[in-house]
Image (cartoon, rainbow, N blue to C red):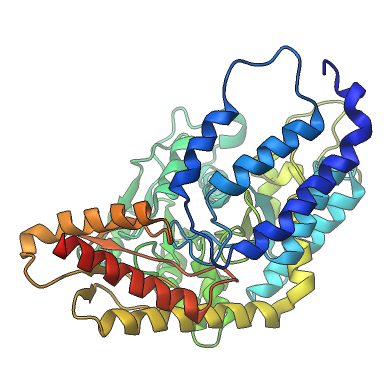
Length: 477
């Protein structure tokens, strides 16, 4: 099959093959292993030399369906608790398929008025979802890393402006290092964003109050005093990845206001605390930030790749990310333009469609209910841990993450880290669930995160039972 035109007539049939497989696969998510190790041998069927004559559409699609539905990680199911990965709501999944079907270039109105309007509405709805004032703008990006990049890119432009420099046109050469201050909860994605922006990932100074990483506000204040009024950037962290803990955003906003700093908040998943009256206090002061980064493919439950940056002064997006003039591209203020000049990506798929669809389908009330259900599930898992003599909880549970470790009788303190590393490996090898290990306050631990709309009481109960079963097996081996 040398030319796709020779096979074009079966395009609709190929989509129907995927749709036919989808029903059974989605129905299986409730009980299937997260990782079927026996099926991983099928991955060899993807390789070999590049064929001279292709196998054609139907055979190739069938091959990919067979391998993917068997060997793919069931990360969209209810038992994947690693890496803070959400699922995909039915409306978001259908809209994502539609985004591929329509294959819109969401650069702007010049390429797709439809995609541009969907993105405009979706950004407005995200602002409303989190209770931010009118006037905020934003950019849809691929991930929280790119959302941090976007927010910190605007901060860089602001910082250069304060120094009388044009960092967008002239770069950072000849300028002092931009001061960046944060607590110990600073995530690697923020450091990576600073790295990509040319500041260096070591630019951020952290001020932890203890081994957990909680911010030391007094030390941060002393550092701001030392800077003597030079412009600086403060990064607050809304939802730390080991425990779900929060920096005191309002206190950081007070510091930023007092010292004239830019406040950027990394709210990859923790921003969703704003949706529930039970947790909204955790993001108190968020509206006083200058920029906020978050993921949509976490708690919003839309497909990868999807993140967003929200900016108090949206005009800075155009100043930081506007492209130099190409005669065939509209300028940021051109009616034929769109959102591309307001973020790091230009030509891109219409990732707004799943966001629009899931918010239109379930609304603010639906998302509040989902967040509160996950809060309940996290507390349910917390009770399982607290009631199990062989398990030890290592932190409070303010949100959706339960940080704990195994501490079975007979294992000495100095052997617990190794035991829990082996327990993490045993969970992966078992395959029924996926929950990775971390290090919290110097101790190796598990940190299951519950953000998938499909997860139920039964899943949490079975996870706790599985962990205890694996601990018993390791002890009695």
